[in-house]
Image (cartoon, rainbow, N blue to C red; front, side):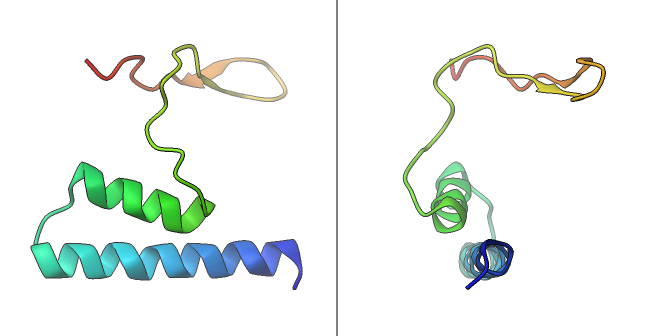
Length: 72
């Protein structure tokens, strides 16, 4: 299976899982988000623990988004 097709399958599976979790509980919780992430990435990475992560424009280096830097 080509990597792109595998990734599409992972997204489809993660969306189904997230939909079912929200449908069953009528809520979207942090645990649900982690379950969807686990399904998508096939690991238990969890929440980002290190600060200093930014999303940048690859051509200009401009910071487009800086996520929250701590879980306090």
